[in-house]
Image (cartoon, rainbow, N blue to C red; front, side, top):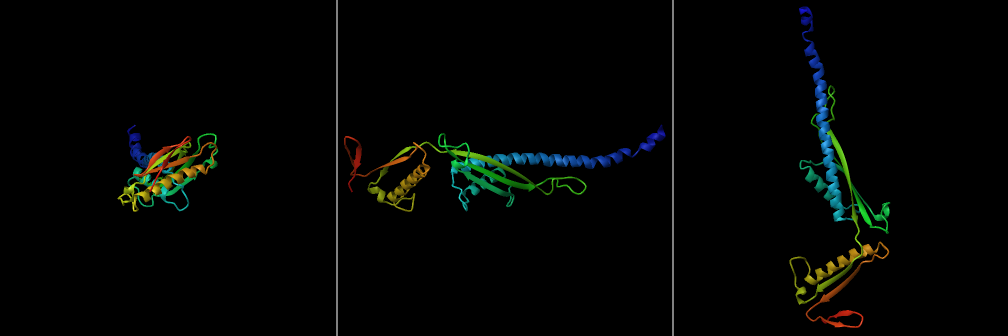
Length: 232
């Protein structure tokens, strides 16, 4: 009996040497795998938030425009403060108009859709080697998000604009005189409303009215409409 025990000495050491690398490999794969799942979830969250931010800004996303790319990059950097140059890649932003989306039609609420996707890479904790399996030096995870911006119903806009003498003055809010900047703002509003009208949605037409006034303005009533008359 004692001889048998003596013969078995060293077997545990051999098993330990054989098993430990395998156990360490499982630990490495488990640790990096769990981290990859966590990073994947964060990338998904970041791209979803980026899609919401992009749709809120509602840029036309024309070729060469960097507006939406900048928004997505800023959101990703907020989620991953340690992001290094080159770690974020394959940013893709697609804007689809209503006529490109199957479930968007003129009978219901119209909308346009933004689709955002991006890939992030980071250094793995346990890259592995010839003897032990690993995920390699770098791990890449991708995510995507979709957001829709619904187009409002038609509206009637009435602007009351000050064209009194003080509007001739310069001001700190712009490079032109007050009344000139005011005209530019009115034009911008009119252009946005006209862009919606260009969609030619039945019974949905935006209108705009302007009531300028100055020190000499007075109102006179007729049978059909109340009008504002002005004198220079």
